Length: 100
Image (cartoon, rainbow, N blue to C red):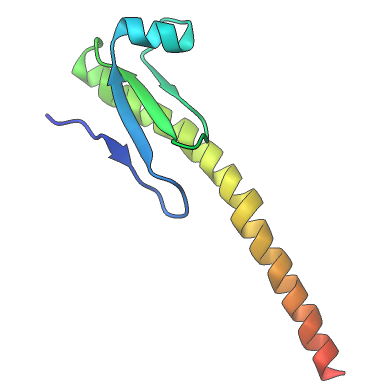
């Protein structure tokens, strides 16, 4: 089975999925983890411990995607949606002014 290397969502940067060893995970996180989400960085990344069984890697990918979704939803709400609401409000004010 070929595991994914990238995950894409609308309105967001693609998420790279990297498969790393136990030692690399410990060096990166300072802990013994199956996986880790980098957060919304310049290059968002999910790290998966490739020394775990395949079924655990699959479960880890889904678990880390949940973390990514929460962060991305918050980011999209605060940047894109709030901007759209402000612009729509300004447009509505401008339209009322034009009607008067």
